[in-house]
Image (tube, rainbow over the protein chains, first blue to last red):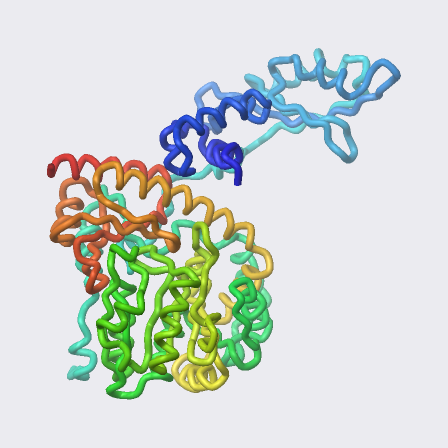
Length: 162
Length: 380
């Protein structure tokens, strides 16, 4: 495996690993790890570092919705142009072009359900290219970013074994 | 009730004491665990659940389900091991049963069985229960705990009837290359020594692929290979292992197995079929994670002055703590709440070392190695 891939594998599991620990885990020296991180960022492989948050556990937390959007394209308007306009809204947390019955899957983060539905009806639905939206509010999150949301440590192994 | 002499004289495992010390506290980070911290792959677990829902709760064939034996034989092609599923594979209740059966099938009362040490703690008692006598062959830190022809000769193993070989090794994490195994194989051929090769950690190697003594010239016919699902697939509690070997030895082991165990448990056999069919990627991911932990632990120990050779397999590091390893481990537990197992528990050559399991989360490993560093600095 090349150095950038090894560093990427560590960061993808835990973006808070510091450079010395990444060096220890990969067998690279610290300078090589720093170079690899710089290259990953410069090449647009790594776009940022964020916490995986269970918003249900936060007082005055946020609500998340997955919105299906259908669009109609014309000579001047392609997916790129529509995506660019949708992505500019700060409420849009993630935006994907998908295969299947609809065109875009959009993850929207809002203060509450009303906030999200107003955003969709007033900002997204009226866009000329948009023909239909279907909003699914997320009721409960069980796993995100590869991390299972559950309580505590369930290590029930014997503390010392042969 | 009166007990048999055999039962009364069987010694308590040296690990027991550290288990009790560690269990007595609730703030302990344990690096003393000899099993994976992962759970078995979910798809393997669902196969087990499905089999229960379909009512698959009867015995299987003594040798194990034919579908499982075929997959085991296919799986071992990756180690250049070739065995007939019909006659040369025996599915057992954990690799432990396979080791026990091998001793009972291959050892006569008074036979000498050479065991390299430090090593896993069950071989000595198993040999004793089979009526054999253990001949200890020490391995050495300067050889990175590989077994050498010189060590075998120096210990008088030329007169042994059987050799137990455990690589990748518990507790040292040592592995052996084809070249090193060739020397041991030559010794075994020259002296007509048969081999029980416990290769339970074969899937957990970092760098070179696992090399088996059974693939050395002339060794297949004199070797019983033991392996299983516990370590590679994180299925320790499901108790499923197997033996591979020439049909005469496997027949004999099966004869004992059919009276003592009848068949290995059925539910785990379904899990194992699924594991072999579909879980290679998960094993690879586990190996990659162990490898990152291994490098972190080894580099941290060497930084704080606990000399540690680079272990090539299993999930153990074997740092040198110098002097009395038991006292070191007890003081470390007392002062910093970190549990490790003293190397001397694993026999001759283990003294002055600690077995450190890195089958625990990265976060705990970092906290534990910080505490060990503080402990070492406090002693200097």
